[in-house]
Image (cartoon, rainbow, N blue to C red; front, side, top):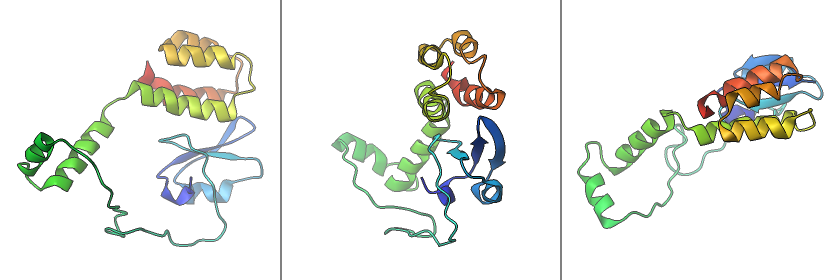
Length: 163
């Protein structure tokens, strides 16, 4: 993932948190071997030394709007056309509302993605992951006990909505 698209991230080096914040702020603190993770998705971020503007596709380039096709039943289209602001505005509003609601499965997936990239070789990794996906906070925490504190803390924060 391109670091310029991420609003915030955490950067780890050998299991220690060395920076957190907006990618532009943490880029100066990067060191060889450091791993930067997007806070929302746990995708590894790639930092480029060359500062180039982002390329946008069709739509409203300044907003990053992209035109794509969706398929709905006629009754869905009928309902959408009656909503204030029009079809696109209604769909955007519904997506924004849904994306703010806690989603346990998404939280578990984001925590897993982070842990599999940074803690996959640590002791009890598989048991911690079993606890995560079972929604068992105690089991999850117990199996991370010997891990570096910064990794435990970040994984716990990411996984919180999963419990």
